[in-house]
Length: 355
Image (cartoon, rainbow, N blue to C red; front, side):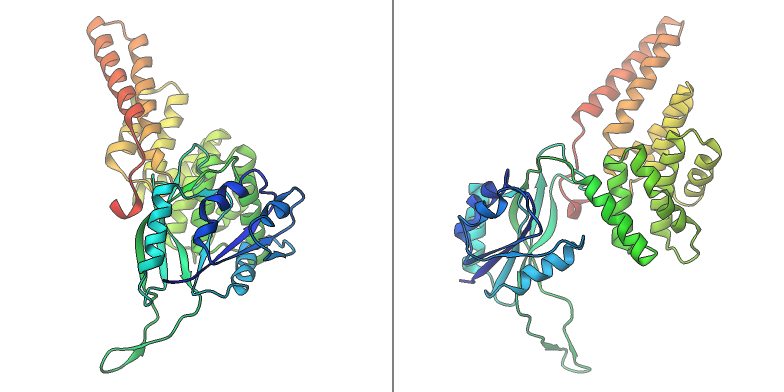
């Protein structure tokens, strides 16, 4: 049986920490809690489970805090958990079974991350694999009988363990500040952070968040070194911002660039929103339909599903009210009811690996 160090970084988690630790503490061989500046009873609650509590001055660098917590681990594997996660009984049993049977050559175990409530900022799927269990020390191995080389890719195992994510509030404002700070310090965002920033904006951002983000995505759009993925992500953010600020010229500038190359659901939805707000329901229907049936999303799967479906229902209902011919009114009402049904029945895809 392998041994496991639980490594957590926490700050002001008094409302959820005990819930998390009650669900996993007995599965661990040591518990390491790194506190980054709590002003509530977080450290007192942690002390009920472990004496391995460390302070780490917060510098808005989650990686630095995580690395510090990992440096304190001494067991075979390290389990990285957040305070708002929970393992139910079924998955506790799966975890224990994994602990008893895990092969020593496996270096990373992925587990399904499931956000049960509406406080979802980045997930496009009902469950999404994330690396959660890490071998503490890695042994490098030579491979290939000729032209031998060291194996660089880790051995990853996708488990059936489901981690329930139960946040009590959105962390978007904190995240947006972090993205801004990274851009300020480095002059650009990595491919991963750029994508996460755009995705979180489209899922939870308000006007002030988009205004703050404008320099980042204008920089990407104008930078000749930007790759196609980042250019498309920028187009999604910029079209949304310019639509909600009634700047039609800039709105179409970025929307049409995306449409001309490879249209995505997000841009089609924004075009639908533009024409719906102008009262042109026939044109709006075309773009909402394209968002659902003719394109794919690149950031937010809701722009490919329930959002345009519900808008299609609204547009057909509006057309029915305006229509004088009884037969056409009936047809519009029928379509409105059908799209309303589809929008209410729509669900997130099962997981990223199934799409």
